[in-house]
Image 1 (cartoon, rainbow, N blue to C red):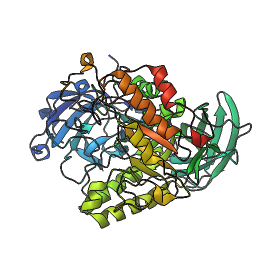
Image 2: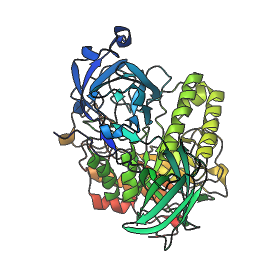
Image 3: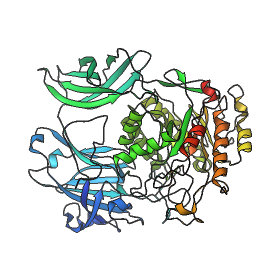
Image 4: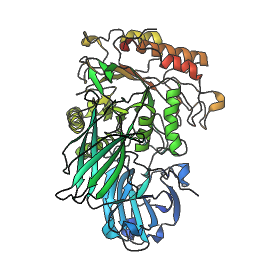
Amino acid sequence: MTPPRPEHPRPQFKRTQWISLNGEWNFRIDHGDSGRAAGWHADPKALTDRIIVPFCPESPLSQVGYTDFMPAVWYHRTIKVPTDWSQQRVRLHFGAVDYECRAWINGTEVGVHYGTASSFHFDITDALVEGPNELVVLARDDVRSGLQPAGKQSAHLRSQGCHYTRTTGIWQTVWLEAVPIAHIESVRIVPDLDGQRFVLTPTLEHIARGYQFRATLLDGETECARNSVSAQSGTTLVLDVPDARPWSPADPHLYDLRLELIDANNTVRDAVQSYAGLRKFHVEGHTFFLNNRPIFLRFVLDQGFYPDGLWTAPTDAELKGDIERALAVGFNGARLHQKVFEERFHYWADRLGYLTWGEFCDWGLDFGKPQALANQQREWREIVLRDLNHPSIITWTPFNETIGPARAHTEAHRRALESTYDLTRALDPTRPVHDASGYVHVKTDVFTVHDYEQNPETFRATYASVHPDAPEEARVCFPELSVPYQSQPYLVDEYGGTWWVEASQSEGTDRGEGWGYGNRPQSIAEVYDRIEQLTDALISHPHMAGYTYTQLTDIEQEQNGIYTYDRRLKFDAERLRRAFGAPAAIEGETR
């Protein structure tokens, strides 16, 4: 039987020597968080249950399906490292583990990491022995602590409102990788569309005098450019692109990259496969520009939940499928909401020409606890550095709807948003930074509001006064706490949420227990009318930069998706395409 999720988890940074560890592991829920005291890390015979990795124990696909709180969970499996890896370092990679992760090899601790959704690795080389090795992993998780980001994971026993079933422990692919002692640690790839070039900046480890860093750009099988520089971290390398073909939603063209570290004897010491898209995204005044042309963002809210895998897509095809479902009804991208999506999702967005805003899962943080904000900034840094080479990501959004913290901890909230904005701009000056979606802004390149008004006439009137030449007239959600609108791109990046579910599509939830925004329409004709008129109020507005419709799919009790939770389309796709994909006034198009 093929283990689940067998595809390479890092398509933009691939070495040939790697082994997936997905599949059946030994497992045990540690209700008392006392496994370390009992010595399970050194003698895992007590782990007598089974789980299917990478699915979290709450999910059906894990074959555990336990949905109460779990303060700690333990995993064990035996691993064997290939003999031809003996002259290299061996890394144990985790796509994501929620929240505190510790690992042991043969009873020796090899690393600890704190994070909800960021990727990380431990070097396990020195703990390995010939033959079988015992790998034990401990994950500790407490979404009620206020110290860790949780996103939409429920802090109550069961799902309620817009909070859903929790994710504990391992929830993305686990794998081994052989890495040469002298190696490429990372490469920052900056597309320069105006200069028709890529600018590469490597971070290198254990290099010696005479080493070279070499990059080769390929278009299919054709070599377009090759260049090398003396191997030094931070030294840039430029690849000029002849007859450049820009990346865009209409033509998501990707170039392949071969990255190599070469020693003084012209021997390749390390080789990594990557890719890049040549595109430019920037802001001029109140308008977004892609490749120097104005673009209107037709976004859908995507929370990335699956009925059988929760935060983990059951297959790679399902990651791709959600993008295709959104494109099929007229959207050109998504706000990735309260979840850090795995790298394979961004790979498919790059391949399919699907624009996204990278967002953090910040809900659950108590702004009154300094450690919570330290945890947020550390993990957000890891996420931005992991994902900043993806051409499909066009904006960073580290927070969402921070009205509660803004009221309860006004100064801590202000400093947190300001410092996170500054951190993000320092890590990646090429993209706009959107400090917090929807409610209270402190320092932002993009101005957003949320509005679930269901009356189209009232909705249209609310935004009639939005104009960059009269910024004081624009709607601000909480003007007593937010900085005013300052003529940036203005978007309603949550609207709609219209509640619709047919009696035959109750999805396991009693029709009376589900919910959506506003009063429930009495007919599907009324749903179409709301969607079309609400959307037209934004698309036809000459100073509106985009929208985010709520949402792509139903999730558990929330029944306001375009698709059901199990991905069945509720509406007529062509009619939705006409509404969501209509020509936008800000792009200079009229109907």
